[in-house]
Length: 100
Image 1 (cartoon, rainbow, N blue to C red):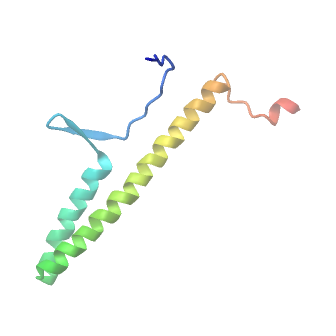
Image 2: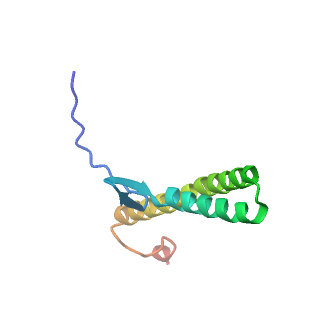
């Protein structure tokens, strides 16, 4: 049996950049940029490729996950705010003010 779902779905997207027809989330590009910069700086400072690669991989991984969580939290907050304002009819009055 086939079903048809006509309920509207609100989709919010993480900020991204189109590279060669593929949209890359901004947090991934930030992580790759920071990892590359860390690789160069660590290699110049330590002159040890092992330390430079491991350090830049650590910096890129931490940036990837923390910025990803940050952008998801922003997206969820924006979605929650939009949902709450549409339920209340766009009114900005607080519930406590209506009891006075």
